[in-house]
Image 1 (cartoon, rainbow, N blue to C red):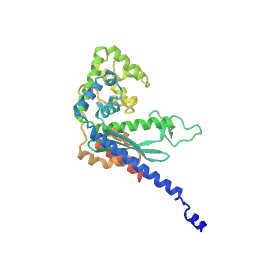
Image 2 (image 1 turned 45 degrees about the vertical axis):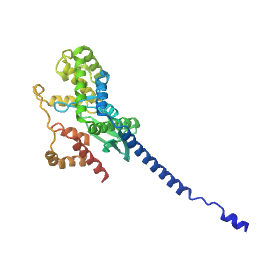
Image 3 (image 1 turned 120 degrees about the horizontal axis):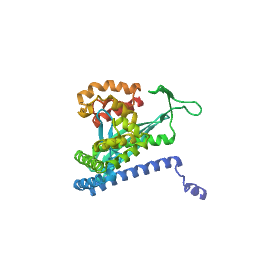
Image 4 (image 1 turned 90 degrees about the vertical axis):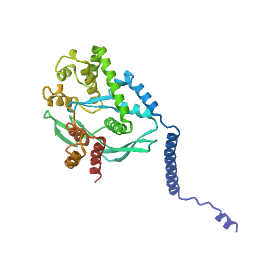
Length: 348
């Protein structure tokens, strides 16, 4: 009898594996739910004041160190030049707005690429803008790996071989950070009200122009030193301007600073700057022409051909967008649709 009782009272624990999986998944789900709820609750309890947002943002833009930051405002050498607010401005603006959530999650990875989903959410309006970013794990080098291996090879404009190899962790860290920053800037600008962007842009350009006008020699030396840090010499700048650096006007100094910012942020290279310069007809810069925005009709008419370019691998998404914007400026929605083609092509 005692043996039967002892046997009946023996505790039989559930499967360790089953208990571990269920408890872990339940804990993760509860944690995720709590985090989401807490963010929205805090946003409702502390709603933003748009007048305070504007005041804080203008205060930041009026700081010379911020206005002169290469990533606050840049000029891409496409056509007559494409100007825009950079990632530093977007980061500051979102911080001033508050109640904005920026998230980055890796959704796919293989030996050749990574795909990261970047999203920006306005917690007060409950609006989320997502964008998938493809990060290639390859880099181009003048030589193959030490063992002679490489993925592919092509000829550059000088007729020399350029080898595609797998990048190191440091290479990937830089590429990943640059592409994710661009995505945050692109979709972040959709959250920030347009009137605040326009006002901030005017302030930044005004401060840069004032500094160049007050002491052009000092500003010119700063710009020359900045370009030297990325391998562009004073002789190269003279060739771009078409005259001696000492004759730079304040407007030209501001333009050079914007181009430097675009190169440092990976939006352009000095080669593309000079190519764009050579493509412009003489006297064209005296009467700049604005690049029209791509209409819905034009986009629908051309997107099939653009889609084939992506599918065939002839151009990456960024290369295609850059080419298109030499003739027509794409809207953020059009850029996001083009970016989705590459992801869909890989999934299939």
